[in-house]
Image 1 (cartoon, rainbow over the protein chains, first blue to last red):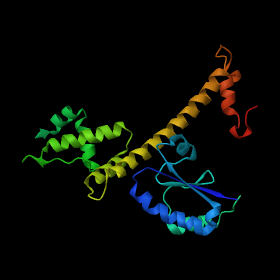
Image 2: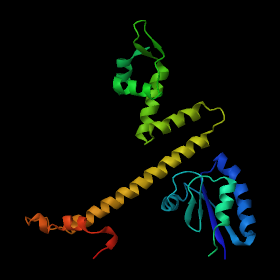
Image 3: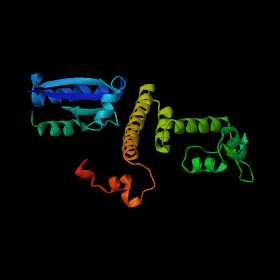
Image 4: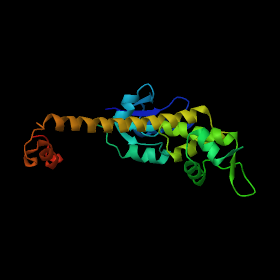
Length: 88
Length: 138
C-alpha cells in the first residue's frame, strides 16, 4: 500500500524548492518512508499530464493521480489533508 | 515627447486605449502641458508595446500588472516570470481542450443531421440539444 504524491512545478521556482522539502518530510511523517512514492514533475516536460490533472497554478500537488492542492498548501493544510486520506 | 494622439499612432492603439491604460494604472503620462494635455516619453511607448505584446500572449491586465511588478521587484528573478508564463500556458491549454470538446460535440451534431428541407420538428440537431445530457447516448 503506497501513496503517490506528485509535486508539479517549474524548474527554478524558488518558492517550490523551499516548500518541497518541508512537504516531503510531512508526507513521510504521516505515512512512513516506505508508503510514499514522491515524484517531482517538471510541468514543461510533462505538460499534457499536468493539463490532464487540471493544473493551473504552480506548484500544485496531486495525490494518487488526483489534484488535491491546486496551489501551494501551508504545511498545516498539507498535513491535515494527508492525515484524512485513506490508503487504497 | 509624444502627445496622446502621436503615441497612439506610433504604438498602434487608440487614444481611448491609452486613457483606459491610465485608468488601469498601467501607463501614465510623463508630464502635462500647461493647458493640461498629456505628454508621453519613450518609456511610455515601451510600456504600451509591452502591454500590447503581453495581451497578444493572452495575459490579462491583472497579470500584466503582476509582470510589471516582477520587473520592478529587486527580489524577483527570471524564473518567477517564466513561472507566470507557464501558468498562462496551462490556462490557454485548458481553454483549448474545452474548445476542442465543443468542436467535437458540434461535429457529432453536424454528422447526425441530414440538413435537408424537412421541418425543424424533425431536426436531429434540435432533438439532440433537447436530450438530457445526463441520460447519455441513446
